[in-house]
Amino acid sequence: MQPLSAPYPADLMPDATGMAAFKAAYRQAKEQDTVFVAIESLGEHWTVKADMITAPQHAVADSVYDASRAADIHMIRAGEIRSDSSAGPVCFVLHDVTDESRARELAAALRTPVVVPDPVGRR
Image (cartoon, rainbow, N blue to C red; front, side):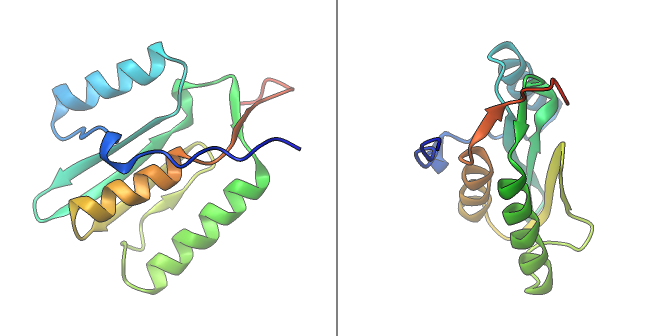
């Protein structure tokens, strides 16, 4: 059994608002072979983005994906995020988060799950 990851600090989530900030955060994740996770301000609301493409040697465990999808469906039904938000399996996008602190919290939750090396090299 693998140990669970420690919670990722929400205040460390990069703000990828604007093309230059997005490119810098994405490039950093790619250079570090880590999953890209960031927040982005879109007017009065925020978007949370996560992208596995920056860490192709990793795969999201099925149980983590299932839990993330269930949480996304719950947040859509509760009106917390827009219905066109997506829950992976490679990219996660949560639209219309009401404020920055909640966006950071959700991004940290996406960053924290156990992401294990993919034994068969899937992307």
